[in-house]
Length: 298
Ligand SMILES: [Zn+2]
Image 1 (cartoon, rainbow, N blue to C red):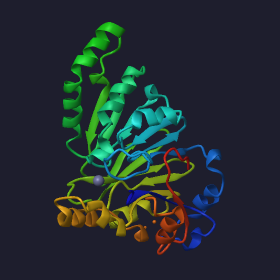
Image 2: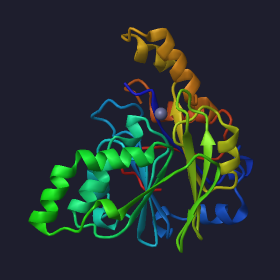
Image 3: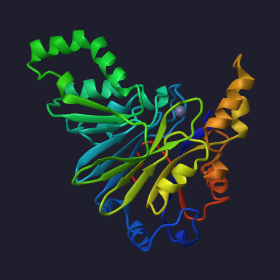
Image 4: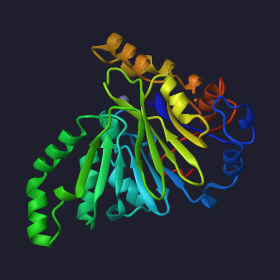
């Protein structure tokens, strides 16, 4: 059963009355086909929660600007999903983690390791909340037997010096290069101490990734004027069934409700059609809404 999934709120024909204002430039560009856009967004995983499912992978996205991939979140399966999407792992240079829930970071270390095993020889910068540096260091410590053998056996360059983790605790500029400017904002995702949303401003379009969050003013501010907002969403009636077999059902339900965003405040399980998600997400938003699916390109 799926009670949470990614949502896309993008510019469209009716965007003038959108809850999130989109400027004229963005509107004009967003009406073109995504394939004509220089900056691409591919949804690698659109499901919520850490349990592996047949229907979807947990959360990950890649933004490709000038043929450079910027990976946002690393749920279980992200290395293979990138390959399926046509992104060579050896080209990974930038990885962003929204928060340290396993449905967002389970394959963070594996992405770095498997990119290196796929030929990565260049620097990779990673960003996310604390303890990203410790997570990175301990992963490499755990993986040392494999790394050491491959350096000796396959002649690979040392992996550890290539990886540069950066811990984020404040709103503001994360990084800027010739392709994108990345800005982060802290969002509300109790009981997680640090959860972030990211905004990518490229010359041709701007894309915001909410991560997991309850309704958050900082996210509203971050997303203002963006062309595309990828927003998590929760179908509240499904939460009762989700927690039904938990020994901690009451507390768990409160946590889920408090830490995510009801779909009608932004927008499948087998009983929920895409149209039902869209109808609920349309309650307060009049722009174009796309129900996210794995490997969808926007
Ligand atoms: Zn979370």
